[in-house]
Amino acid sequence: MSLRPFLFLFFVSLPSFSFSQQSINVAKLKTHVRYLSSEKLHGRLTGSQDELSAAYYISKNFKSLGLIPKGNISSYYYSYKFKQPLFEGDTIGGKLISGINVAAFLDNHCDKTVIISAHFDHLGMSKNEQGQLKAYPGANDNASGVAGLLELARYFTSNKKKEQFNILFVAFSGHEQGHVAAKLFCEQPTIDLNTVLFMVDLDMIGAMNAQSQLFVLGLEHFKDMNDLIVNSKTELNIQKEGMMNMTRDTEPFLKKNIKCITFSTGINSNTHKITDELKMLNFEGEKKVLDYLLMLISKLEEMPDYKCKQTQ
Image (cartoon, rainbow, N blue to C red; front, side):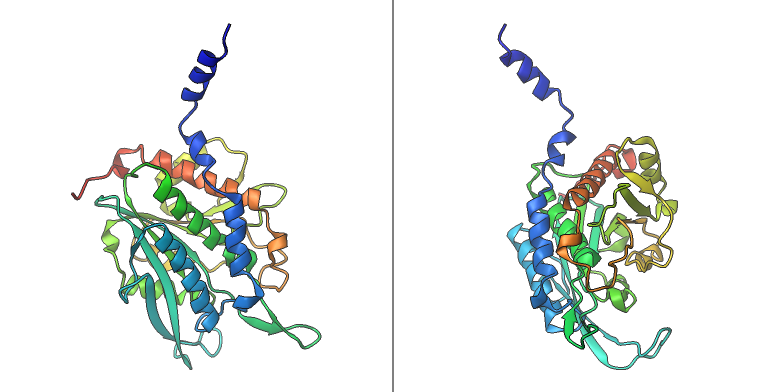
């Protein structure tokens, strides 16, 4: 008996999402992290030329995907200014700093939008024990999150499917200064925040441990997502609590009554150290994080409250 009819029936009967799982490209994740965490970007400090170099890299990728610019200066760039705090708890600040976010829009001609974000800034330079200036690579924190953001943007623009919502992709800087960039974006957004269904932030998703832990934080504000996670099977060890001291760019959006969750593989011994390097990351683990997120989003789309109303 010929196997050809059997093989045909086998492949067409596979769940459609199994193919989309293959779309997250580990090599591309690694390429993005390698550049963003490289010495040439000197730790991507907000307000530095290196922040601009990183922003250019992100905008160039957005442009290559054909995404619509959603900055505030007629481009993908969202410019802002803030006063650098002189000490923890300082509400007045000292030196005026100019920063930049990068924002791009996938228009599915829907009345609702989902925000996917990641911060791209880090700590800049520091002296090591020998007195030499060394860059904080920030490979996991948060080049990994930006790599995930760019891969999701590539996936959603090339999956030959129109989602039930538009998507705003935002790369924030100013995170290490108390998520100031996210706050300022919320105060003067480039989309109507009343149309936002929910927000997903990717923060340190590249260091999955041997226990396959994935922190999904903020589910107390997002019942539908929580129910999906409770009822879905996964090899990941989902943690709904922990990382209490972690500053999140979702906080100003929560104050706008937007449902927000943060995906993270957690804080580890390399966090905020010069040892947070490319070689320490688990890229296959990051792919699992992104595949899991795509599965959850696809399930949300099946719910009546997430169905699109076409705007044209």
